[in-house]
Length: 208
Image 1: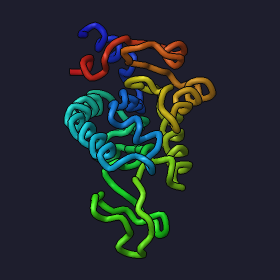
Image 2 (image 1 turned 120 degrees about the horizontal axis):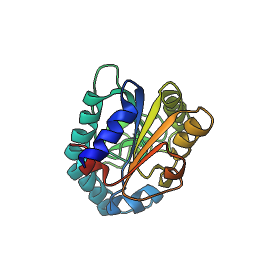
Image 3 (image 1 turned 120 degrees about the vertical axis):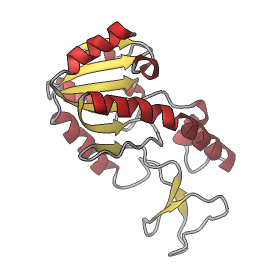
Image 4 (image 1 turned 90 degrees about the horizontal axis):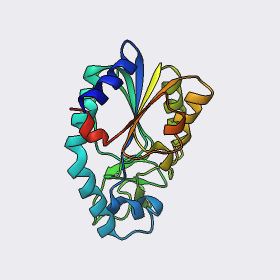
């Protein structure tokens, strides 16, 4: 793993980077993301449990990358509860906040409660706060694309081509913006074929 990390360090050395969190979606979350409104409460709870189990490991890896390289921001293409919250570090979560609900009528966010089905402010219907259900998804994509275009290099962790709505952002920045692309994934994909550097392996194990 040391030699692989050295290749990544050479690729990112002295450059401004944007990191794409595209780690594999937990099995328990796939049905929830396909149909956030129709899944049973037990499926939603199982997904959140899986994301909580991964939270510390993801934060460890992402924090290490932020400390090691000049990272402008992290773009979360897959659902995650990780939060780095460093000064001047931009974090864009395209799939919203799986732990929260929002009101379809007034747009307010609330912590998820199995017992609460209506908005306490306006009695509107509460929905899982996961994009692309919400109107601001276009603004988040704009932020992610801008972040990609002002970076020198994109570091993609996982299989970004499998994740909507942000799958095309690394493609756009590479093909139309000429940005360098470093992909770290345990499987080859269409994105790895156009990468300047492709490292085959589990991102969670490659970064110390």
